Image (cartoon, rainbow, N blue to C red):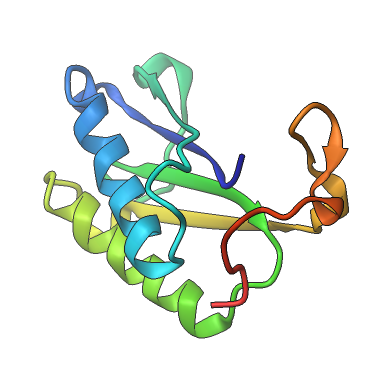
Length: 129
């Protein structure tokens, strides 16, 4: 249901995809209080011929894009950023090589549960954390 997360990184993570997913998922559980059952995370890995990383960053450069229901507080977003960086850095990625992009999407722009706008569904948890 929500959020939908895409992690893009390099070959360093090959064979460690589930660790990377767990690092990001656990940060979302603690910081923005999503339910345990709420899972939609994918990992895309690229070799050096298929990506350009920012100048001064390592091959460990990792971009994490999270599309989520709009409504989280700035405090919750800050906590999410810190938690993701801490968890992904524990896998060996330098903290400055982690880029996080949150895309706040209004509830009416999510078609869920058979094509119903999320704004018309009882989602069963709080968004305004």
